[in-house]
Image (cartoon, rainbow, N blue to C red; front, side, top):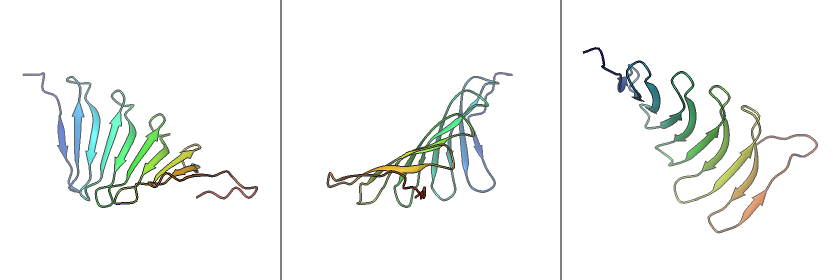
Length: 119
């Protein structure tokens, strides 16, 4: 006894959190929402950062980079049949699309106009 560690927490909202790590140093590695979305985390206890979010209904996968609380969107891979991949740059909350790769091989590049329109 005394070495038990938390590996799973079932939330009242229907979601589930999964943990890894030794007793007292457990860290969140995965969160499954009731709607089927799955969020994956990396990092040490208390510094877990979002790295990927998979949307169950559409199959879309979003990738993130940055420290906890400052995770910014860097790539979106559309699900379903489109196969589109969008790449983003910028800080959290100010990300902008810079490249789109279509399944047919077409590549679209984007830059900010003088009016700084963000998509």
